[in-house]
Amino acid sequence: MSIFSIIFPLVFIVTAGFISTKSQFLEQQHITGISKFTFYISIPAFLFLNMAQANLHNSVSLNGFLSFYIAVVGVFIIGALIDRFLITKHSDYQRHSVFALGSSYSNTVLVGLPIIIAAIGREMIGIVFMIITFHSALLFTLTFLVSAKSEKSSFSWQQFAKNMLLNPVVLSISLGLLANVLGLTLPLDIINGLDLLSQPAIGCALFVLGANLAFYKISQNWQPALIATLLKLVLLPCLVLLLGRFVFMLEAQLLNVLILLSASPLGVNAYLIANQIKQHQATLASTVVMSTVLSGISFTLWLAFLL
Image (cartoon, rainbow, N blue to C red):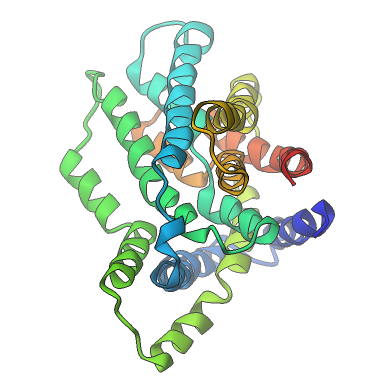
């Protein structure tokens, strides 16, 4: 497939969602309903079914995990330091942790997964799911660990653990992995039903992403968002490339998957964490919009370089 053929259908669906909301053809309550179906029914069915049928030999790579997560943690630390010395300019652990999250958290499900399926296919989908499973848990844990150093923190680890364990993405992948490991064979009728539920997952996810962009605006103080966007779209995938190619010597296809995952824009969940901690909300809302829009350019460049 040409790069245009990979990128255009995804941009088309995101744009359709944005226009539907911006024109008020769909109101926020409609998007909420579509989002619930997408994230609590269709995507979990898609993730469970594909994880249950994935080739586990291609799903686990220690060197792949290290290439991805060392880069992610490195950018998280760099983001925290940039906020400390260049943006906030005084010690505030809550602000530093939120900005660090906004610089390193990838929209792996809504953007990374569709790009990889379109560009590379489903052969490496198992390791994509394994990365997705630990991605949110690691970065949210780091964020709250740093934030907890602040005297203002009222964070509950018990509630956090419960939310992570019951997260529909984590839960569906974990159950699919369990079924795969145990060699469980689901009845054909169940598989067909799950397959029907999963078919709209990618399209609905991209549509909801575009629709939600209409609710976020780039703030007047856009410079911090631009810094976070550059860290996310440029520095993070470059670090994954350097580590994967020159340190851990990954095979080309696995390295391509990890770079495309890391090159994904900031996920909306990071903005929700910012709202919960009550720091850098405008910055992360701006970063969600800016990184998503600019990811069309960055993905084109990365695909041209990799494929």
